[in-house]
Image (cartoon, rainbow, N blue to C red; front, side, top):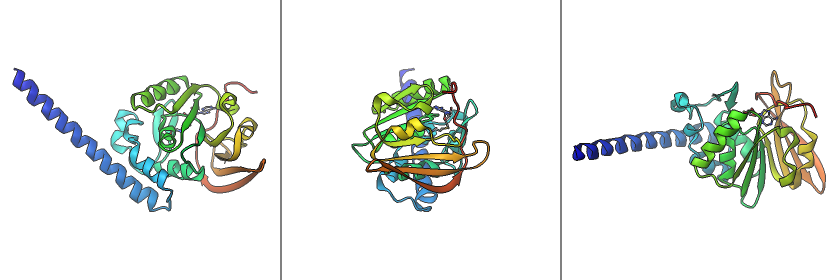
Length: 232
Ligand code: SAH
């Protein structure tokens, strides 16, 4: 009986290891073919994309598709962005050690984890209570001690921890919320999909230099709408 148990646990360890290395291979392939091949070159971003186990951020029924070239549903009508978009937005905000980041729209927690591989601290806010709870639990299990999560309306930013070197908004609106502009640090960068939330938006990057904010408009993208808890 005892030896049967030993054999069974040995077999399950072998199976789990095989599954793990399958995901690792899929992840490396994703970075090579979807991300590097499309021009992402920031070493920190590439390393983070090779490290974070994306298959653990999607519902179990989608784990075999976690490394495919598209967004996936994460429940509550929300989605985890396509891997390339996560990498692109990450590179755009110029992540580095020593920086403090704010993310609006935690969702699965994947973008927060990618940033947390590079910067010092990531503050992230989610407006759907269930997603906020699930992602906080997931990030804790995965050992991300430098991510601080919060349930609430990210439109208002997180003034207690401002200013931020990096602000990433992963939901779309027709304008950049004023509180987020005000919470940018000197030398800081903000990226957000701006446009009609029901159709297509443009990725907009703000940079703050000597107190002045300049704007750059980039690729067309599609994101879920930024919602409000109440109009402020
Ligand atoms: N970054 C996520 C994907 C985000 S999808 C990931 O890596 O998985 C957009 C998320 O923004 C959704 O979870 C949505 O509920 C959330 N959201 C929408 N409006 C918000 C708001 N005002 N404040 C905080 N989160 C918001």
